Every structure is written in C-alpha cells, then in structure tokens.
Length: 171
Image 1: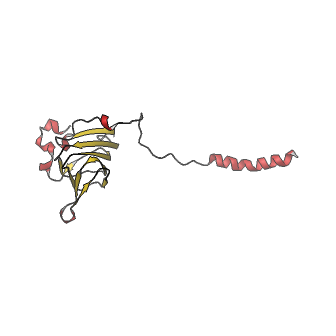
Image 2: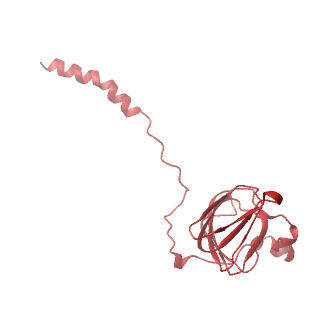
Image 3: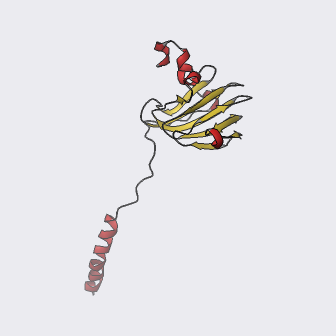
C-alpha cells in the first residue's frame, strides 16, 4: 500500500527539482548606494555652482558624483532673472521643475521653439540638443543625468568660464 504513494512522490521529484532550479527574475536595476539617503527640502545642501553655470545660482548634489561616470541627481536654485545661455551636453538630461518658473528654448534657427514649465513639469533633453533656460521669478530645478556632467556653450562668449582666471575656470 505504501508503494503507490512512494511511486507518486518519486514521479513528482523531477518536477520539484526542475522548479527549484528555474532561474528567478533578476532584481530591478538600482543605483548603488552605501547607505539610504533622504534629504528634506529644508535641508538641501546648497552650495556654489560649478564655474560653467555662472554666478548667482546655487547647486546641490543629491546623489552620485556629477564629475564621474555614473548616475547623478543635482538641484539648481536660480534667483529671479537668472539665465543660462544656449548650450548642450554630451549626455541626456532629465529636468524636473520643483518650484518657480522656467522657460526652455530648444533647437536652432527654424527648428527653435520654447516652452514655459510649471512646478512638477518634466523635460527629457537629449544629448547634444542646443538649449537655454531662464527664470523670471526664480526656480528650483532637479536634473537627473549620466556623468560626467559637461556643459558646452554654443557661443564661447556666453561661457562664464571664459571670463575667469584660468586657474578658477577648471574647478
């Protein structure tokens, strides 16, 4: 009587072993981090902007290292009237307006167009697209990107690094 029960179990064993060896779906890719990071809006670590952005704005690195290969998240706090002249980046930028107003100009010549963002709006700026940004009343912008971060002005006269002593322009 025990024999049929044992035969059924033996017959099921290969199925159980196969199921146990079936590869499980991979975990979703995440940005590596050594610790959990949570930054309250009131505690954002604002500091001086990189030389390529010019004076007046403040920046904060939220995660990653924009100067190195890999993902990064930065925020820019721009005062009223702040402008960044037409420029481009070698990698895509994902821009989200956190607060304030922001006008984007994109493209050149007949292809040029502009749009005004409201808080919560998002823009995917593909690599090498010429664009400019300005704010009337001030803005806080979050940029997610792939490092190293680089900014290249279309007109070298607009590059704030060209107005600095050589030692300061490389920082």
